[in-house]
Length: 377
Image (cartoon, rainbow, N blue to C red):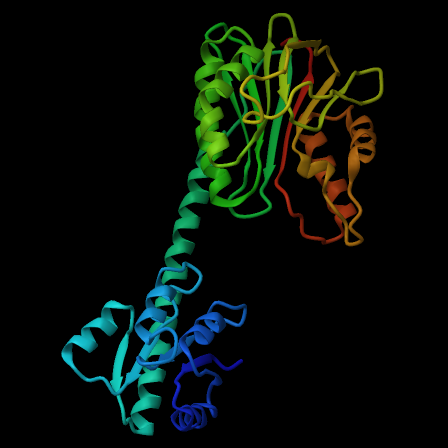
């Protein structure tokens, strides 16, 4: 596809000649006044390079260039000034306005083509260099995020524990982690930041830090969530983010799980002798309100019982027809898989979702924590 050049020149004969010289290699459009040229440059058909006369009806070439450079959508369009104004002050003004070249009339065809080709090549090299730098930074951010995730799950008597994480993009907004409190209770957290990519990952890191500080000394999951929401509410609203968060405390002596849930789903409990069921959240995500509504809840994780904490990427996994995996399939799958070990339950669930998707790429992160009660060692 040829690169696009926009010529802004009020001399019709010169504009026609420039178009003729460039049309063999480029897609050329023209504008006879500054305002028309500016409007076309800011439209959806953005040019790859602009050739501007200085003295034109309406806006001058210098004024057009300044407006383009102050607009983030057009600031990187390379500009060549082509004008009869030849004073040093004019040239300095052209460069200060954002021009990469300042050519004077009349100009020969070979020089015009050489300057245009050189600037487009220079711009393309800079674009590729910028993309490479962004790619490097994204790799580094993804590596940092992986390091924030636990490398292994804690081992506790009476508990089979497993976690899995499959980001939809290189940098995701889901996270999970584990911690042992001073009273020897296991803390397990799963959360999902709205959005994806680097912004979500940055919010994730801040939330994770706040959660661990609160979970270490607050007496209950609800109190920990309240502390984190108080600390982060203003920051979350400033960046227009919310964080669905599930936090649980597992007592290895009593097998009791105490948890609080701020908008996170799905949470599934499957007793050893029954059917899997959903445990609904009773409060909105962190950042939605100045105070949380979530309360503490309790359940016993007896031998054979399964507690599954997932992200919405599980229930919202789609196939090629746009049909979602949904809660019904999740509950059926957990019930069927509940007699297996925690790692096998996770693997079996992902296997069923993969078969359902039939190669369709998923648009959301998929995070899963599985806790299963086992006999005391």
